[in-house]
Amino acid sequence: MTSLSNAAKLTGRPHTGLNDGVRRLAGTVGLWMERSASRTKLARMDARMWEDIGLNPGDVMREVNKPFWRA
Image (cartoon, rainbow, N blue to C red):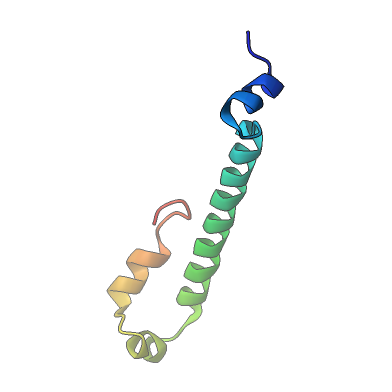
């Protein structure tokens, strides 16, 4: 069986499977946090502000009622 250090020698890259997974997870959690914060801000705006950015109340309700994991 090839050890991790031998795998790195064969591919020319260090083994980063765990690090890549942690980075992806952190990126996903960060994205979810951004979505949640954006939807909270959108919900706190008034109708005039929504109109200024081209949204109507129906658009806003659909967006703010989405779960944080849904784009």
